[in-house]
Length: 214
Image 1: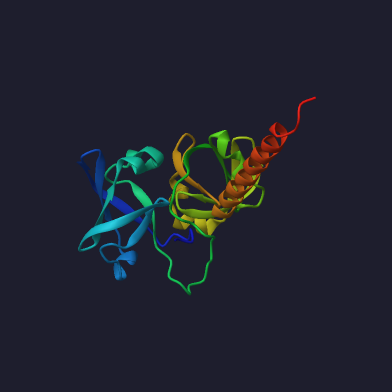
Image 2: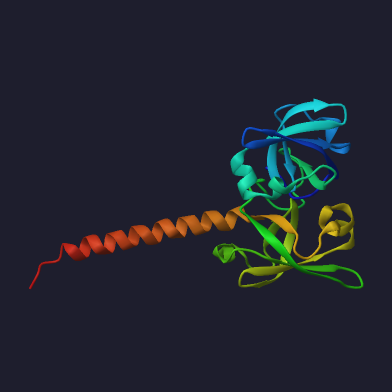
């Protein structure tokens, strides 16, 4: 579990193919203070397991499913990425509950720099519209943010200067792909409602077919 508060920006040092997956080596500083093999680290919002540590670098192994669902498939050497270690029980939850399970990849539509903040519009597959609400939580490349405006198949976030400076959001351009994770609470509520509606539908037809014919 993560909070969406980026601890530092790391750099991809190398990428090697391992079957259908990739072994990714990341250079970092701050998060290596207490990082251990088997620990979880979010790379641009995608939860990965540390499999090796060497000096100021660590390795993760991204499997086929991860490469299909996230932007990790497009990582190249030299790319800068957002890093966050898994949260500890008892820590302050400054962002929101983030699993590191990317739901889909979105596309940056536009970026508008204002006198203070920055407005970023992101488009995504409309099947996820139901998880987006105005002033709701959204995780973009591992960064916990609040949706400022929501329209069909797209939304806008307003970035404060500190967040813009301390994350890779400042490196985005229109057309870039980003990892999106929607609020887990909304996904569970949607699942429960779907199950309830399905049960009610089945119950209705069971009762209907048992009625006598006239």
